[in-house]
Image (cartoon, rainbow, N blue to C red; front, side):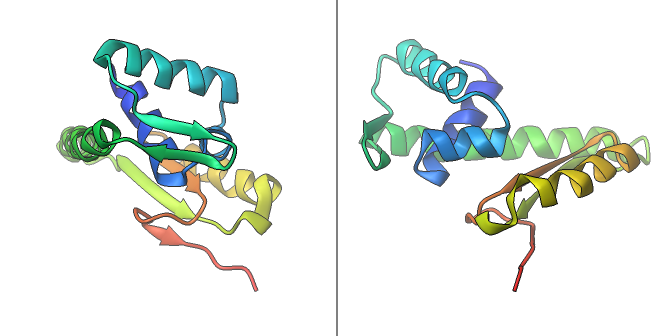
Length: 138
C-alpha cells in the first residue's frame, strides 16, 4: 500500500467511476485500475464493486475510504508545514469544474499555476465534496 494508491482509490470512490477518476488524475484508465487492484490484493479485500454504471464501495471500501482521506489530509498538512518553514507556498488546492469546461479550458490556468507556485499542487476535478475553489461557467 502506498500514498499514490490511496489517492487513486479516493478519487475513484468520490467520482464513482474509474474513467472519470482517470480523466481527473490524467492517467490511463487501465493503469488506474491496476493500482486499485494492487491495493485490493495487498489488503485482501474487494474495495469497489465494478458494474456497468461505475463503482460502488463495499463495506471494506467505505472503511478504507475514511482512513485514506484522513491519511492524505495528514500528509498534505505535513507538506504544508514543511513548506511554511521555508516561506514557500505549498499544499494542494482542488479546483471544481463542470464537465462542460473540458480539458482545453482547464490546462492553461493549471500550467500557469504550476509555473508560479511549483511546490503547490493544483488538481482540477469534477464537482465533488472536497473542492477548495469552484469555477462556474454560465
